[in-house]
Picture 1 (cartoon, chains in turn red, green):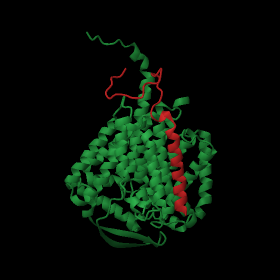
Picture 2 (picture 1 turned 180 degrees about the vertical axis):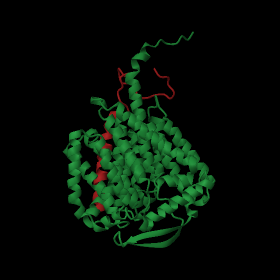
Picture 3 (picture 1 turned 90 degrees about the horizontal axis):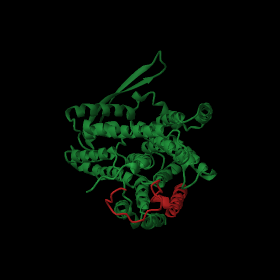
Length: 50
Length: 453
């Protein structure tokens, strides 16, 4: 009973967090001061820095 | 039923991971911290979730992650060196078979500590990682907290969902870890963005802090009590004078009110801190530590994992009975063998020798120092950077509390520690990257392009 309560509340919150992360673009990239426009998604390895 | 729910939960994380590969990292953290497979009793429990999550996390990073400006911190190199060194002591171990068992989980923990910072590219990722660590540990702590309130617990008597004493489910380990996560929990009451701090978030966090504080009582782990004391001191550091007075008065009041409610099992055991010589558990530790110091004199490179198995210790248990003026001293000879180190520092010394201990200590000290630097550098930061200094404080305090707990529990290579170190490194490189983006940008623009022809 206690075990299930603790598991339910923590897993529920993790699930909710995961769903919220899904919809947040700043999970994968943050707009930096160098980005005047959002850069293209696909990046190539070893691309020289600007 | 529970198995299906666990399976569904992990599958959902993996599913979202297809869109957001960082979720694979979070899934790994969850699986490695809470070990849900230990709570599953059908065939679903035998799926190698941890391996799948690790593979997907690595694949997600290689295939989908932005790798511009990937920074490798010196501590990641040190971790790699530690990994290599542990491999070396494993193949030369005194107990090759047993050492191999420990190596099988240690290398994963260290390797994850090296990998994790590479993925921590945004503030949200750092926050999400900490959130998953807290909630995974939180599941054990909530169970422990409620059961302590209900029954009072007792050393080895608190049932934390899983019957075996492994990983974070062991009493002394969970009570040290529970106290060490408190500073991070408090950070979430002010700076979280996944769950913006409103009254519900604060209520949950404070309730979880309360459960954390109950863990040393529930498990009757003396280590936990020391960690609570250190937590109390560390919290003072970031307070203003007025708050400090209030805080200290509150502690005094709570302390006075709480002591009568503490279970007698707990108070009796805590009193043994003063009379440790009469206590087999504490006396053995000291005897084992002496043995370890002698052992490395002849084996300076360490004996590999599980080297403690060869120890034979003899010590006098000294019990003083009666009041000071007519006290009688009872000495009884205790003989024991193959006693574990019960201390991360001696665990490193005995198993990895002087070089291993030195490297391990260097990694810890570098982490503490880097957090101190960030803490001071961003102490007056406002607006977008206001979260940095408090997080540096929280991660440093968590680390310090863990290291104090580690003095009495063999948790030198616990995966949780490497997650904490990995988070520190990732946070550090993230802040460094941000700093170079904002601070150095104008100079770079002015720099003339090198002539190519």
